[in-house]
Picture 1: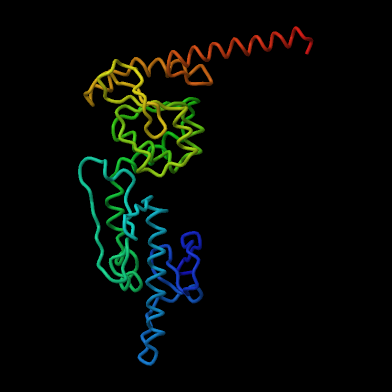
Picture 2: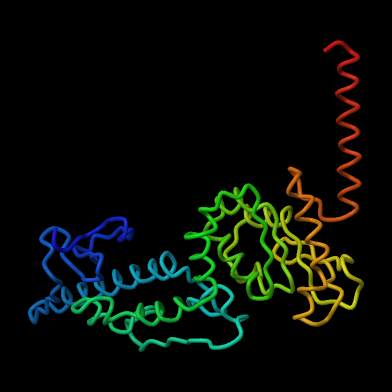
Length: 298
């Protein structure tokens, strides 16, 4: 099959007789012939319907690619409209790439529906720009490191320490590799992290996991390890004992060094003295219950 049509790459359910091939060429679903727009002088309405169907199909296909392949999220505006944006794009220092298409029938992700239909998505869509921009992000790098290295590790316990924007990159990984990260990672320490629940597509399961498996040390005038009383992406926040972003790394080292050491030999991560005391009381109660059962002849 020369056009290599793949239904998994074209999940959009449509009566439109054409579909994009693996290399981004629009081909007929049956004959695999390249798309050709039919302009009929004797049927203006029929021509308009075909134009509308073509634009609608290309738009929906591109929306799917933006969300599924490039992990962009829809950000709804106050009016009846939305834009696509990388998670955390507004919080990343450095450069921000903004793509603005023409007006009329073209929508997000498309430069020209004519070029997309006749010359392929590499020529008519914004994919090359997105690939160039997305391929250089820290999020992409973290995904690559996880897939090629960390996920293949034989380590029984994996601990993550993420500083600044590294925290956002880890949460981005969690958004798309939730089950595996939950299974492999035992604890996460965020240090003055840039992650933000409201701008990253993390579901309830991910938030619940972060709440019990991570802590966030933030810049504060309070003493080191003192609770600051608020939440961020489900993570209890703790004072880093400094107001300097760079100093937060060394200030908190002793604390999470102890946490990692204790967690390596325990099923549960103990983050604070209060949790340690609770665990000791719970252990004594369990032991007492077992003792009572043995005395009772069970």
